[in-house]
Image 1 (tube, helix red, strand yellow):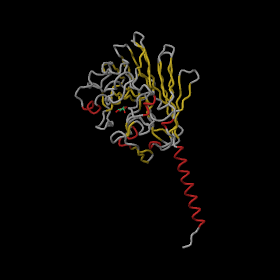
Image 2 (cartoon, protein in one colour):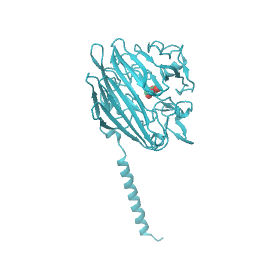
Image 3 (cartoon, protein in one colour):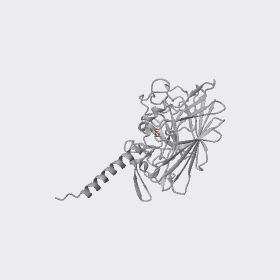
Image 4 (tube, helix red, strand yellow):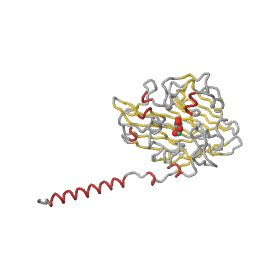
Length: 370
Ligand code: BGC
């Protein structure tokens, strides 16, 4: 047999070049664990403060005073930023590209089916395995220093979603004790979008206590009942005569353990309320009061829905910032957003974003003492 030396040399060289390129691309893959986590602190003239991380845009602390002027951190999270690299239930994070659930991790857009991670039973939750809560955001300080702007480009195909999506989230802490969260996004292909802020609040500032004594008012006449996998059934249910009625201020714990199929599914409240806000204006959506400390928080949004989650799945496995661990109902979340599973329900307000359009949304958390 004749040995073709030229061919052997050619194939050996090609193999070496291929291995080198592979190694090169392996080394240039982003290694998130090695990027420095930077924390930014916003403080207003009354001493209210908000700490934010470039990782996930996570709000790692919000400090507000009680009626005697004692400042306490009122949000769940960790003492060291590195702890946020391990798995946690979206403490303080920006959630996207699509907050909340998408049934069976699938949706159809312009005749094409998109397949997403099924990271919550059969469903897709909070943007998938590596959502916006997990990525590093580029941070710029605003000129007057009362806020920061976070930017992130989510690549076409990231977590299965179509289109390069460029997102900015701006956090501003004003001197009237309001934390403003402004979202903006643009895409180069038709996509879906639903962004929220996933802070866990306990206005007592004592995380060993449950939030059942907090009084809540929701400016919503109806809510979205869910199936056994927590996907909205599609019906819009009036809250009247049900444990979901928070139209008048009521303790969160008042009806939470009432025998009710919807409360059993969520192990408590874990539902989206349909806000009485048809004009897409920035209006008051929720108000929470903690009688003992006097701390109050009002939530304003231009979004159509708000998910009240009463920390039902916190299970004493994560270390608290203060002492012990975070137990069930040690916090509540008020996640302003579009309705869950909107990409699969044509009757729900649309979450489609097309090239040339600008997605904007705004939520304010106003803190006060009563
Ligand atoms: C969801 C809950 C979920 C929690 C943490 C909330 O937004 O509604 O069902 O357990 O996030 O992932």
